[in-house]
Length: 361
Image 1 (cartoon, rainbow, N blue to C red):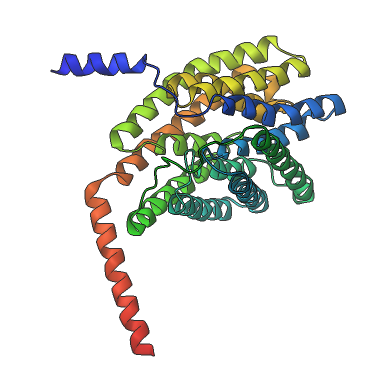
Image 2 (cartoon, one colour):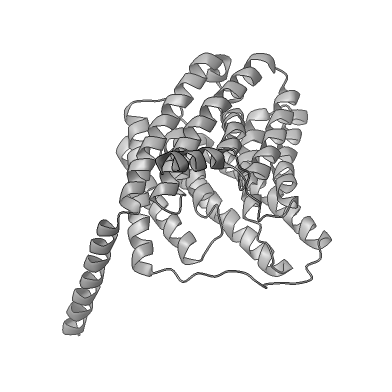
């Protein structure tokens, strides 16, 4: 039996799942990331362009089977949420304790809201990711308006692409066969608190040990926590470590042999398209290309990008730490006893508060 189980697990690792997403999405993502990069290249400001490209990832939230107005409203709301997340990350990155606390609260709220409104995958991931990357930057109050402005331009660019796409693509059947889920608010609250605590710990560890650009720790932890159950979380953790190891090799090759800014931009765009094609088909395979793309987006033009060996060693260490935190958090997230006791105490607290409120009247 064990041999059959291991055989099935090994075979599943090499199996590509069918993708539920439209084939247009990867190319839209490539455009949303690529257009700011091309503008930055021709204007001679790659660093600012990378920030706008990062914001362009909001295009991932473009809804399927939705009308024009609903699509644009959702894109603007998601853009606003990502701007708020990025701004808060920049504003509160000045102190270890405050940054960790604010990030934990933000992650809790973002996860709760995304689950409450049934936001499709990747759910709260990119909102938390933007705050994480902002917190990982050196605190510079004088640069906050400029960074937020450039980030906003990136989201508006993605919304413009979505606008054009929505006008070109006619929807013959709208809002049909769209699955909706009723989520227990108590379960959602418990899960949100666990996610928030994991994010708080992730940022605290990165900042406490003064790791360079510690955002990889919470991003990796959150990516692992996206699993739907304990088994899936541990499997994602293993896939992330394997994919990251290979992806770091790809990143090393790019940093070692690709020096032209134009070719770096082309690499980022190509990797983004590949990631979006693979992310719903095979997680480990997608991470192989997601790792070098993330490093290029974050580190191109920085001082550490000049030392690829040191850069990749640090990234592997941070991703390993983040994956470990995610796996531990996943155990708490899907431990039935913890969930049952937490929900029971929340319900009891609600009853006590209601009685106290009625007495006060």
